[in-house]
Length: 240
Image 1 (spheres, one colour):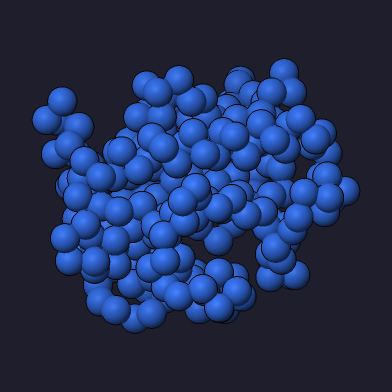
Image 2: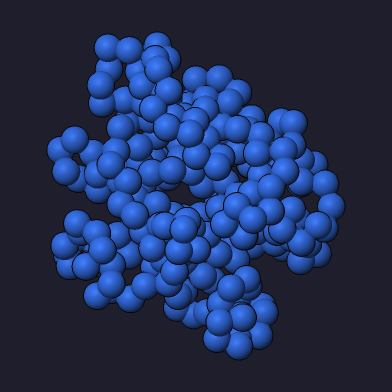
């Protein structure tokens, strides 16, 4: 099934699929990066964990009628996805103040945003992914005004469902990043991954950080934290 390598990014390798031009295989790497690649390391088993967690999350969102590029998990580190043309926007939804927004705007960490805040960033590593307003996004990408609004609406719907999913697993969804892509029919769907690499998650009881901030801030063992998240999601899924 897996054909030649199409592209290699910081966290994944992307392969063609033999005889299926509108499908791709994503292979998750063990690499960890932070601060737009300025901090790097490798953790045995990380690719497996991000693949399995992302697969569970996308399967859950499909059950909630929220389509994505995800088709199925192939093995511990690979998944089959529909081919999309990625829109160069990172859509960040914030439920609680953490990370860059506290530094940019002087907002105290743990301040609750009600309603949630949606931010757009230009997906361009050489510019350190700068924040955008809607006018910038419309100028720099091929999305229409209606499509941009739809993307933001979808991000908020994803937020509602992910908050429920993680809450059932004893986790608070602080914020997360989404990417979107165009399918062959020009429709726009969720793409990339949803994992502890792209979400901030805090333990509901202790407030302990349960995401890539463990690596960013050198707080402990990243793999044991990710294993814990996968276990919680599996237990939650099995309980239903």
